[in-house]
Length: 379
Ligand code: GMT
Image 1: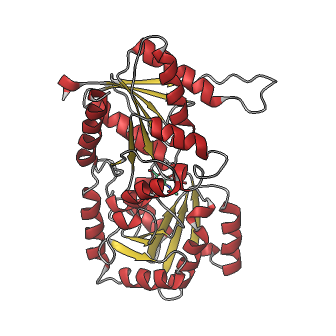
Image 2 (image 1 turned 120 degrees about the vertical axis):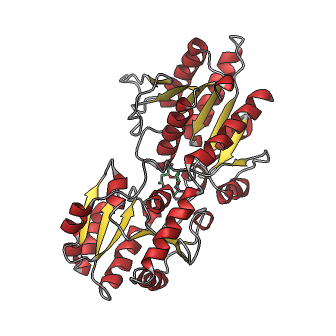
Image 3 (image 1 turned 90 degrees about the vertical axis):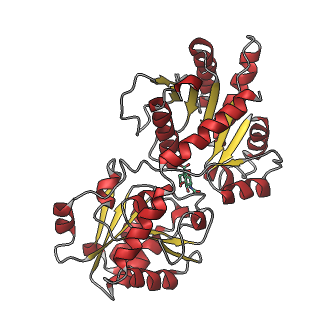
């Protein structure tokens, strides 16, 4: 409530990626609750598309200089944090994604102490900062140190928490606070004209959204789809863009699926696209949470996913979707064909929405607020 209103600095990647989306949506929701939220990022966050008297945005000044082959972003960020904490009198810093935000926050905290200011910081681990990038020897010592120095650490799934203990010498407590969704925004909308245009003969519509990195196994998406459409009329939407896109386009040409596959590129209103879809495919190698799958479920789209990372904490096998071993395309095809039957689909859609409701922002926001209070009071 407003009586405990806090001034919080949020640091994140301002991009389409899940960690940036979660951080931005969290900040927006906290602002609506009366907290004063200061975003500190290198550009306006994609989802900061809303106006509220409690929301502030501070851009990190990154000056080019001929000496720098790599401009030292982390230092510019730490300096900006010092500046904002000092002049806006913040109570807490909350950084999303450990690299390089946690170590920048540590640096800012140390500098502020020399000015007589002692501010706690919380690091939220999102996944690739731990499972792919962070454990790499080129970053590991800094990641371990800055996690251990954080005044609070949260992870978006229990599996990510376990991975953190597995890969790093971290012994401190990690609070699991799952990702969330705003069901007011993500809900099935009437987009019949779009559905008709994409599926003129009422074909079943499959969808995948990602950043097209290797870890997403987009090949599996296309191979699953190819086998499904041999059994029933179907179309596939591929949303997003990234390094694998060209290779995936080639694969579609090889498999002769081009007429049935649409590449939509990056989309801001992904909830409108999801609204007309029947099945979401997430065969990732690893996924600490799978926010894109939750977005689909909120729009009543069941999910075929790999049994990996935090996905089993989200998708209920045989209820809101199905889980298969990573890379088991045949198993995923079998499940897809099962869900897409007309006498099964409505039940799976209903269950997907019911599951999504358990991750509604109104359920998760108090977990963050309570954790903030705990960290600030024990600092
Ligand atoms: O999946 C990505 O490549 C992007 C990455 C990010 O940092 O934005 O996503 C991670 O964080 C999301 C938000 O917490 C999770 O929903 C994703 O599962 C996680 N990605 C992986 O673990 C691969």
